[in-house]
Length: 638
Image (cartoon, rainbow, N blue to C red; front, side):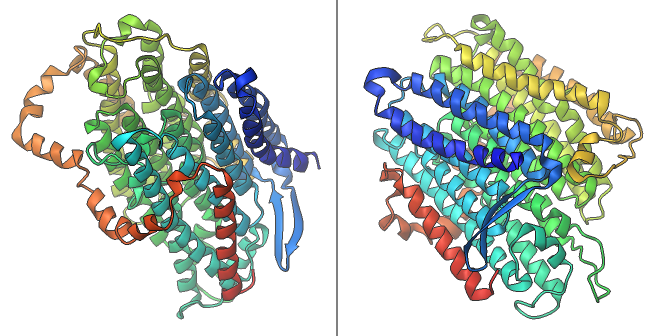
C-alpha cells in the first residue's frame, strides 16, 4: 500500500504545485520578487520531492501493485506500478527537477512566470498520470493534458510585439494541429483495440492479444492486429515529433514558426523530458505484444509482423537526417539544441525498430542516458543565451576567454553526448547497433549502416557548434552577465548522471545486465564478443572514429570560423542548397499543404494563443475524454 500512496503523491504533487504557483502569484508584490522566490519554492517543495518519490518507487516496482476505482459502467480509474512506469517516472521527474532549477535564472525578469510554472507542472503531472494509468483510456487522457500544457509552454512568449509574437502564436498552432493528428490516430487505434479485444486494461490486454480478435474491416485476425499496430505506431511517432510530422518542433530559418520560439528550457523539457517520450512509452507498452513471436491460439499464425517496426525504423532515420540538416545549417542556438535533443529521441526509436529483446533493453538504456546527455548539452548552450541574451550562433565567439569553466563543461558535455568511450551513451548506442545487427526485421542492416553514418556526421556537427562559441575573437560589444550558480549546479548534476553511469555499466552491468533483470525479471546474456563491446567490427569502428572526428573538428574550427571550409561554403551549389534549407522547403511545404492548409479554418474559431486563463486546459481534457469514450462505446465496450 505504501507504493500506491507514493504513486498518488507523485502524480498529485505537480498538480498541487500548479495551484500553488497561482496562489503565490497573488503574493508577488510582497514576497516573490518578480517570481524568483516563487520559483525556488516550487523547485524545492514540488519538483525535487516528486523526483525523490519516483526514485523511492524503484523498491516497489517489482511488486506490480495496482488500484482500481469503478467510475462509469465498465470504466475503471486506477493506477499500476511496474518496471516500465517507474522507470519513466524517474526519468521525467528527475529531468523536470533539473530543468526547473535551471529555469529559475534563465527566466529571471520574465513577467509571465505564473503561466510558465503552471503549465510546466501541469505537463509533468499529465505525463505522470498517463504512465501510471492502468488502462489505455486514462493513458490517453494524461497525454492529452500534458500536450495541452506543452501548447501553452510553446506560446509562452506570445505577447511579444510585432512579427515575433505572431510567429510564437503560429508555432503553438502548428504544434496543436500536428499533435491533434497524432491524437486522432491514437484514438482510432485505441477504439479498434476496445472493439477487437473488448478490453482497455493493461493487465488483460496481453492475454487478450493472443486470442482471436473480432475482425474490424474484414480479413483475418492478423490483419486486425496489423491495422491496430499501424495506427498506434503512427500516432506514437507523431506525438514524439518524428517523421512525417516532425516540423512542429523544427523548421527553416526563414519560416521559423517552430519550437525554437519557446524558451530554451522549455524546448529541452518538451523534447527530452516529457512530450518527446510519449511515443516511446506507448510503443514500449505495446512492445511485448508487437514483438511476440508465439503462435496465435487455435491458429498456426505468427503474431509477429515486421511492418510496424519497419515504419518506426525508417521514420527515425529520416528524422535523424533532418535533424542533422538543421544542426549544420541553423544559426539559432535554440533550434540547434532542438535538433540535438530530437536526434537522441530518434535513436531511441531506432532501437525499438529492431523488434527484439536487446532492442528493448537498448531503448530503455538510451532513453535514460541519451536524454540526460541532451539536457546537459542544452544547458551548456543555454548558459550562453543566459549570459549574453543572444541566440544567433554567428554573433557569439571567444567565450573560452571569458568563461573558462564553460569550456571545460562544454567539452565534457560533448564527449558525453556523442558517446565517447567510456561515457554512458557509448554503451547504449553500441547496444542499439548490435540490436539492429541481430534483428530479423527486413532492412535493419540498412538502418544500422545509415545510423552509424548519421552518428559520425552528428559528432562533427555538434562539435562545430561548440567550437564556434568557444574559439575565435571575442566581441568586445558583448554585455556579459555572470553565469548563475543554479545553472552550474544543474549542469554539474546532469553531467554526473550522464558520465558516471558509463562507469557503472562497465563495473556491474556487462555482459549480463542487471538492469534488464530488473526490467523484465529475467536474465539476458548479451552474447558480446568482449564484455563491454558488442561486436568487434562495429564497436571498434565507432571507438576509433569518434575521437578522430572530434580531433579533426577541433583543428578545423580552432579559429572559431572554420576557414578550411570557406571554398565549400562559397560554392554556388552549396549556396543554392542552403537557400532551400533556410526557407524550410525540404519538408515544410509538404506539411503545409497536407496538414496545415486543410486545418487553417480552425484559426477562425479557436484563438488558443489568446487564452490566458488556465481553464483552457480543463476544457481540452474534457473534450478529449468525451470524444474517446464516444468512439469506444460506439465500437464496442472496453
